[in-house]
Image 1 (cartoon, helix red, strand yellow):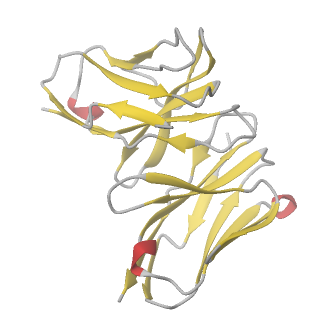
Image 2 (tube, chains in turn yellow, green; image 1 turned 90 degrees about the horizontal axis):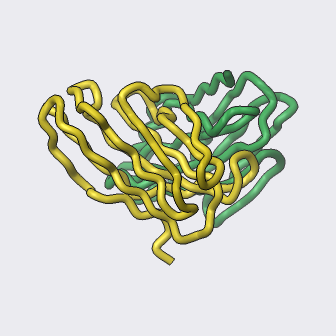
Image 3 (tube, each protein chain N blue to C red; image 1 turned 90 degrees about the vertical axis):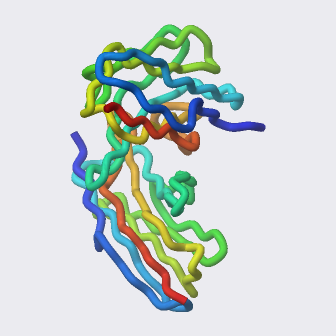
Length: 113
Length: 107
């Protein structure tokens, strides 16, 4: 099992560019989520999904879009990158939202100049 | 939403020492988990422990949900234990995290 796979590992964008961070899991997990990690701020939830076709906002959703067309994939889109979006992004999945262990991908380090 | 507070924020240990990390939370929870972020940035799930005690090798965790805290014990610490330890929990909202305890184990 690959678990949770994130691509790319590193990315540099210029302000205003758009891109998609990819996340895929092969554990048939219903719940998937995106977090960003900034120094001194811990992990903050951006968006999450409790199943295909269902998404919801987390603590810091502005500037990001998500969709969930399949159980396996949960891409995160930056529509117009800003320097404030420089961060490390983690995708995570679990069997259910409330009572299941959460499994993380290895992260994507994004720099916006 | 749920407030999560971890202590201490930083901890330096000599190899072989024991330590206790604490996670306090403000509301009843359905789900409490401990994670280790290693120096390479990977987040590893250590325990899923909404209540009670669990052990895995040199690590153990206890959650007392009625008193709204959880403890992570590390015995006979090794340099590979270095990194940041996070607790994460859900009530009626998705998993939220504390700001972590940064552990440095010195040989």
